Length: 354
Image (cartoon, rainbow, N blue to C red; front, side, top):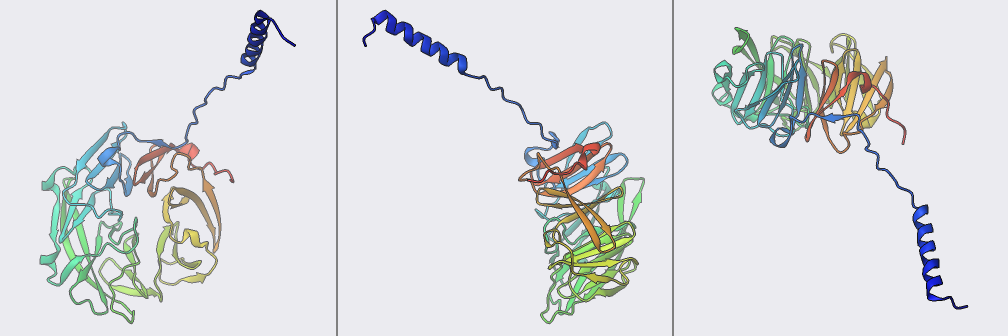
């Protein structure tokens, strides 16, 4: 059948009009992430490996910069003097933080980091002629240098002829006028390593209360504040942390050690999930938090039994978490690509099963 030209045009217009009326307008909805970026930490200040919260400040540490956030949310960045050992965590206390490079240690005021006259410098080569280098440990994000509750800092070193010993130094510090850091005493510790092969390998080193725990190739030791030491576990461990009055130590595969008396004696179990053996552990109030890559978990122990609950981490995907701190009404996490925060009331929201 043939239609006149005018009829054909009319049919085509009606067809097109009908098509337009069937099209739905789809509105884009912006998805809000629960974790937000602290915008003051970008470009050169993005890489962060450690944080510490006090009543008045959140201290944030990483390569090239030591930063702080005050109660008014004002951010300040101070250039560090020494190059940072990228990916290893250097310690912060409420009074000072440690810089370490080559043969040098710098004990710098946390509150006044830009004032070099307030710092104490240690030449490790002059202190120990057998010095070869600073032993930062074997595990990224943890490192082997730490500060205990007495303000002592333990630093393991490499030496020319270690034999079967690992050398570490305890540095006692004093604070003058709330800002000047002084190293008041130095204690050398020589820790026997029972490994058949001479090794200065440090698996784990952590300050716990007023003492330290250091794990070597084939044994784990408790270092007291006076430099004395004793073997407490007949094997190496990969992690150790304190929650409440209980110490937990972890090792692959699925190995869990528990101590109720500051590491003097231990109970051994083989029931801990292997994927959290190499996690980092942080205590927030009464809660124990574990992080692995960008994932966050709430961990609750009852003896050697435990409950693990994944927490919501939207906004942190692909970021590797290096520390967790609670400051004011927020929880902060440092990563290799920025500082992130979330309201404390939302932090414990569980992650939905995928």
